[in-house]
Image 1 (tube, helix red, strand yellow):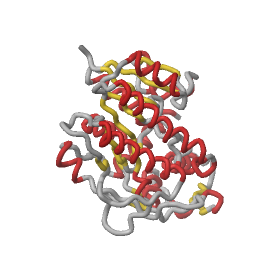
Image 2 (cartoon, helix red, strand yellow):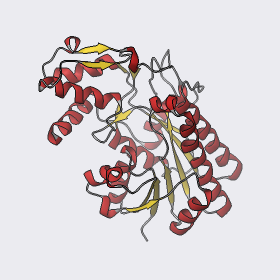
Image 3 (tube, rainbow, N blue to C red):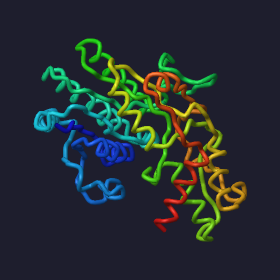
Image 4 (cartoon, rainbow, N blue to C red):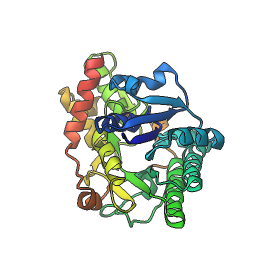
Length: 320
């Protein structure tokens, strides 16, 4: 029989790519979303898999509704990718960050605990939990120091997942993913904002791009590669947590330079720093050590920063 996977937050970047990946593995894929509006399903449509997935509207904060859906599907694996995904927005609405990330995790784990079945659980955790990584790179043993409501919520969910794994012997794992991009990234993320702005400047539709801090450093990867790591985490004999990253860190200034160089533009003539776009707190440096994933999952990234940027630009140009 086909394995059944339930992906919460299936309409997001990672959810859509994971659904496509699991469909290729001959899974029956179910997914939950807050709303079934056409615009919310656009990522699945872009990947031409909307009709291949079983999409269900579900408020994961509603324990009764959550239980009904999980019990009806009886999935072999649950990938919890739901919840607010924007660090910036979490400062504006911290309650939504806490509720959507923490409560959904607890509700799903409670269902698995009460049913006492063998459903495997994956939590989408985040490098934001580490805060600033000022020397070296973060490993699975690095202490968390969350600096945003989003990071606090992800940190709480990480420890909740770890607690259920150890207290109730549930196969529950966290993937601590560092920044990963793709053409499906929402336009309110700075990477897409930079690419869209550069295209507009190249086409002489605007002269300047306003950004916040550009001295921050991030460990960037390619989202379609990272969802494969999620799948591999649930393939292991014993449940554990893994950092998924490229192991390389670049400044946002380098990302900007790579984008503008594609169009033979000097970014310094077009990018302006605007304090309006600076967050109350922001990570200065973020870099992960993926050695555990390389050793046990046999996973390693293939895309470098230049390839990621060019893939995203080419896709954006095709849309225009």
